[in-house]
Image 1 (cartoon, rainbow, N blue to C red):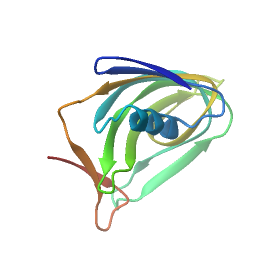
Image 2: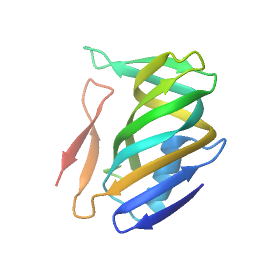
Image 3: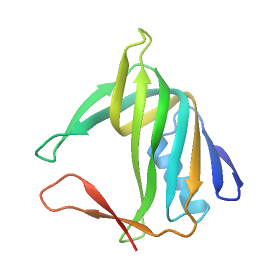
Amino acid sequence: MDWTRSGDDIFIRLDPGEEIHAGIREVADKENVNAAAITSGIGRTRDNAYGFMDADHIYQRWTLESPCELVTLQGNFARMADGSGFTHLHATFTNDDVEVHAGHMFHATVEVVAEIHMRVMSKAIMTRCPMADSEFVALSFE
């Protein structure tokens, strides 16, 4: 992993074997980020877990174990009440047959590289709080 920062912009490179959520959280911790928008991400990943939240607030999940292209990545970074980092990411993947898969990203391991842009919201305070009777962790602003 490596990254560079220019003002409120951080560009991250994740390397083979690194997990995307964990990598973004590590950079956010080292750069003292409390709120950010993940504006883009591309690369090649494997062990991709993705899905959607159904009407009962339960996540439906699928896994793409074989390497895929990470075509898009977007979302945000906030802190939980205990100060730990929380990434909420959505992604689009294509397998080697160019079949598109997309949704909420639960997990993705870098196969070749992932290049991610994070825009720090230096004056914002965003907190994630679990919702009752839901797997969703809501976003609140102070």
